[in-house]
Length: 581
Image 1 (cartoon, rainbow, N blue to C red):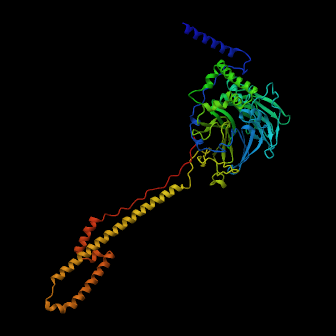
Image 2: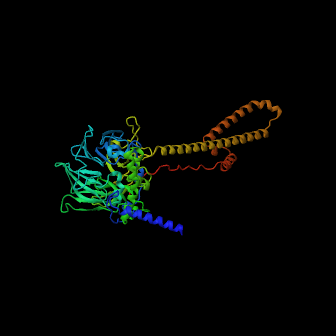
Image 3: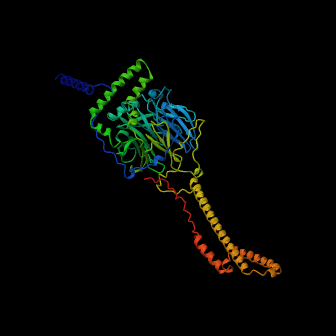
């Protein structure tokens, strides 16, 4: 009884503690939690049918950069990407074989755990005036001159916009007048506390910055982690991703629906990050995390707001302790631990697989295809953007920039990337295929030239067949020589028998001797003529009948007819380029 009573007391104490954590107001994180439901995501079938196009991808700057979230370009042989530690990196050259840091948004820091100091640039776009506009998650929006490295803050990010301070400026797009449409992923927590935004009520926003008045106005509120932004070609609407609801929303700027917001595409099989326009129309939507159909924790927790609140407050206890220690005794260990507790990256890495997905949409929001891979060459894709002949894949977590060649220019069709950068050996991965992946046409393309290995193999086979033919011919010649030797021996034996039958008398022997010599000479001449006849192939007509019969028997026994050797067809069928489904 005493044991049961003790167990009961423990259970009651824990229950009371949990109720206090859930119900006591003001405990961090002080955010709202409501019930909501999510629809089941689309299966990988139809236009989302599984494929391995991204298995042909490669990497550049592997191990030399950290978190290339976004990509912007102004030339087919140049791109800029945003990195941890506040850096903007320029990569250029026909094979993207040079790189250089053009600017650092913040003053610098010791590591990612201090990114609130050094800044974390995310979305990048070039403005009509040639300036690179940077959305920094902590420091706000900047206009950067990439030639001089000079940067200018567009507004004070610590000031409220429509009653709330922007906490995570994320992505942006710019119209021809220089107006900037940008997303604020959360108005309650900063980027290092992204898990809080994921489990609490949505607080993200879509905002417009007026280039003339230098003011911001909120277009859409209560977005569950507002992310990638993309204007339509006609500038009549703007698209933006709602990451934690797995969908893309559309806000109308002009026309009869101006001011309204609707769903462009939903039930995506993962969490959308940035979206970018395709060269041939439509959009790329990059899924930074791909759904695990076995366990969909987000959908389960959506129905239990008190459970989400309890989880955040329980995890908040060690975070509070680490923050307190760091204030009293600053050190890297407690700062880094506090930074990771609510950060999205550890969770993404914990549940991640090697699967990567980029969804292709048409201009109306219909899913028309996808790029997928499962070999881990590229993962955590935050953005897909075409620069020249390549698609480049950004990521907030990778230490490389992914790429996939999708086109060949006429002057570079036979040119393969071979990168050497500033003596640091930055190379496109050797394990990545440089074969063009025809994404748009989705058809097989024959390779014009056979691989060198097949040519060499064919040559070896032909040499082997030739050697066998030579050996067979030599064998037949030796058999013919043996037959001729036998014929000559029989002829000599026949001549000897005839001589024995015609032995002269002793008295006449001396007189006939000169005649015998002359006869011998005649016989020698006959033998010589006979050999010539044999060599000319006229033996059958000129040789005695018994010799011919013997030769025919010998040939039938010893010589088999020569069967012509059929050479194997070593031609290799044209290798088709992978067909995109």
